[in-house]
Image (cartoon, rainbow, N blue to C red):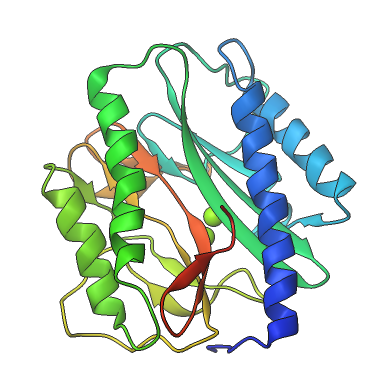
Length: 248
Ligand code: MG
Ligand code: MG
């Protein structure tokens, strides 16, 4: 179901997303080679709880942690572990969600650890920019196909693959609400966004093929060709004349 938010609901969405933003900023500050992804998870979990919010990922469809940590060829939904040690040169995508007074925040960043290759650094930068290429055209009345097309054409102009198997989403009382928000699309197609919708836009961009598969842990999505992938996500509020990015 697509939900249109009241002013009061937007305030709660903003707060939930600010908690997610602050959690990701804290992780960016703390992350370094030699840490385990389980340590990152603990930092995020403790911070979200301290903010009087609920780590929304923990227990979501049985997910066992409060953030997703996806390294290099892992696209999304990697499970934090005390056996996974972060290394110099890694790119680590962290996806984070919180619930504040019944409303959801959702955002993701890809962190570069120490000195990373130029190729990986460019992938991370283009992935982030592809989000902003989409946001640039957004306002009430814009079609989802136009949003997807803006993200896709920018990423593909750099020779990258845009993941199709996973998409962005509406967000509110539920983390995943309608509509689906693909990072690919055809201009002039798809539903029109309405004022006071809130959606999570989350390009997942692969250095090589767009194709992905799931590991047998039932969660971790990896690139089919083993090449690196990056993820960047924010929750945005659709307004008459543009958007407000709630998790920035
Ligand atoms: Mg997310
Ligand atoms: Mg999301």
